[in-house]
Image 1 (cartoon, rainbow, N blue to C red):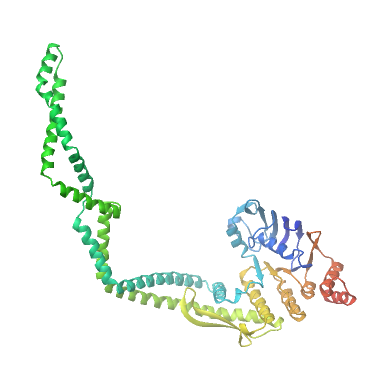
Image 2: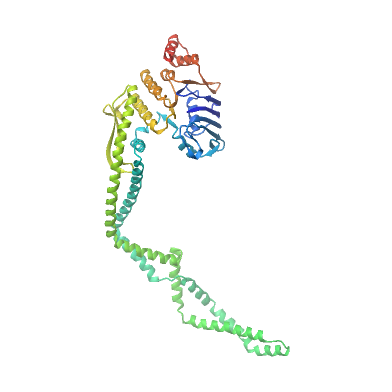
Length: 508
């Protein structure tokens, strides 16, 4: 349970510092005073709503164990919320992410908002039935996990089969395209590094005439080399360095002449044509290597198209076996859910007795297999569909459902937040809700915004939210102040004697 909250600087509130008792805690006050803002700000301390206060802190007594934060049952828990450029959360002085805080809070806190109409959706109800089934049978967790994995694999295989069927419809076109691509590359028959070698040859060819002329002009050095050697001898200088240089130069010239002979043997037109073809492959595929890899892939594709019928038959058989297994797992899950439905239905009808309703029926129908199994949940009240019942009946049925679910979703001594639970209800309906919440408050601490005197008078603790000079304030009311506030709720700002008497009677 929550023992204290502190909030600073949020919208019309400067500062709120409140201490709470066990049981039913009710907030009342004029419209626009800030009741909903206060409730949302408290919820933000558990990362259920977005932070509004610049600084917030909540102190509560633990009803769970959490080894990550060294929390045991009955330990004091302190959660802090600091909002600057972004919002930070601390749990017992340890930094905690918003997502992790939401997960931690989910076992302690439950927010029931009648504005949310999705609780009767089949998927939500199936998830809750699965939660119930887990508490009753430990093997159900493995069963559900096996189903989820098998269903995902079934979806993958079905997707592959669909692609094969699509390919089969256009397989001849695909085969022709693959053959065309293979033939086009094989007709060129590219080799890795061939393009670079041919470009080197082209470069040499482009400089052939210039090199020939240069060598011819430089060859005179060989005719006069003996004169240089004689001069070196007269100078008594060892001429070996010059002889070596002349020999090396001669080797270079001869190598060029040899290569020139080879170049003259080449068909220049063929070289240029070859370069052009290889260049077109490079432009399309990025490199000769990638072109060769593409050709090999197309060969594999062609082989696959040739074997398409065999692959399709094998895949259909695999799907048939897996589908049978998935349906069997879904059937077992359904059997567990049907047992859990009886318990949920029993709990709902227990609360409906206090809400002047009865005969809620939860039916599990079989539907086409999907990720939730083969079950679809349908609600009936007195034998009719929920679309045909009144809004008052719908809201009371929903309260019974949410209350029943809360008993399993959060631990005993956890906290329930009810947002305007009795708005727009008759006195009889409001009294019925007060009866249910009074009973529920024996096991849970309940925070509720109330608009009706019946629920307000049932509170263990009553807070008034008021706004004066555009500033909102909250204070706990004593008995006399409660009588005045309940009287105001009955008769308005001009309190009558009858309203005072009725308020006193309600509190007594």
